[in-house]
Length: 343
Image (cartoon, rainbow, N blue to C red; front, side):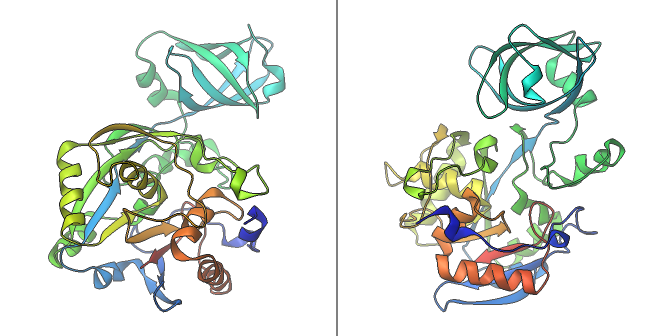
């Protein structure tokens, strides 16, 4: 298939610019793969679709304030978006404007934080070495901005309110540069309701990186690769996952990042392995899902790797038909938008 097969028309007014008034106040489009039908619901209806024994798997990564605004030595405004830390302690960052940044250039972000450009990379990225007067992440927490996607328009003052809403209520492990957005809908009360119907919860950690939202640059999906992302599954949660699978209980993934980590973990040994891993799996149509039985996800960008993934899980025809319905029914799209439950 070609990436153009995953295009759809989306009016700009349907791109959610703010979180819903209540975390669990979103709409939920429920897609039934067995009948190729879908129906409109609310996220608060989720427990009615859960069964006793279901294992609901969350990604507990925590977003850190990875967006920095600084000045070059000549006074030019520089925006740096931290993408990933390398083995030698340098960072790859998306820089704007990258054309101003050559090896040896310095950027000042704060009196306690500056960076030197080590080398220029491709696609607007540069590699830098930070110099900090104090703990690097403490300084980031003080001066960094929440790394909202570019389609959400904010001024700096408004970003303070996003620090809480662009984070799941169960976020624990720092390391993500984007939120696992399907989890943004959950509240402690929702977990209580799911427990009441007999569903169980497990957690993994996948630090959402640039690969999750990197544009697809291949026309033919056979040539498409999603950049690797690191993940961790604890001994206890691996045991919980393997027991659910052995007993034939449903595993419900909350989000595409959870799905990618689980599918990567199981694809070689046919069981979930505890420990650290690098998810280098690219899911495209024809992929055989071994780990995930149901998926809760937000609505994704046209021609994106995330839309390709959920179409591979739900089926291309019904997924694209459901997306067209969501547009007509004026669902809210993307990170702060509504969600879809694929059964």
